[in-house]
Image (cartoon, rainbow, N blue to C red; front, side, top):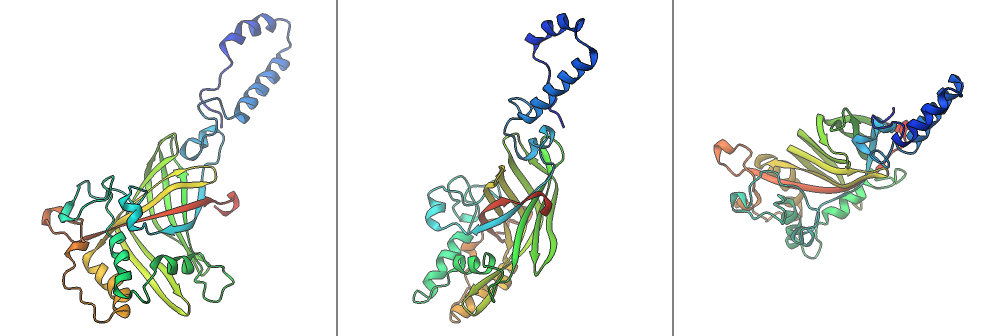
Length: 300
């Protein structure tokens, strides 16, 4: 597909017209086609040269791309407080529910909760990040490897929108976790997708012990910048409802670690109102950062 901006250079037109009478029609046609092909191979001019993501399809690039997550990271307290990439603004309010946001109005109370895990059992702390890495990014030939793979598939629709799918492959079976049929993007490859819900069930492995890191997210936002090699500054963020957090996250993970731990006062964990009309702080904000590598076209 050629870029709309590809045209003969104005400075060449007078010379071409003067030569037309002496040049056979078939040769002119051949020269024109070669000039257009050269422009396309060069990237369709300055506007399209080096373009990726949503701008690539109209410049002769791929019309669909698939990216595989190679890391999935819970930001540390130090990273979040320093203003490093740690999530997004999920509610548009600074310090909602009396819980301070991180720099950039980032909502991510998961950061503080995971940091607190170390205090529950300082002699044998629960290292969620290490166990996630072991469960997600293990070698398939390892006996305890769960074989869970997360992909992001992007299909450009226009110069400013795309279909974005979050895909999980587990045990060889592939399924789409969520789809945004009208994700937004720009010429620089910046992409933002919204999903109503994403149920993350991520394996955690600690030696012979295995557990599941459950995050039933709602109001999910995925952002990142599409590049030829992958997705840069990838963030997956959302909100976990209070009841789901207790039943699917806190009780399975923390109670076995410290059976005497009591969680009567959880208010400090909830910084989002899932239903603003009720004015109830019942949402736990989550922000995960990741890196993703572009897959070969035959794996789309």
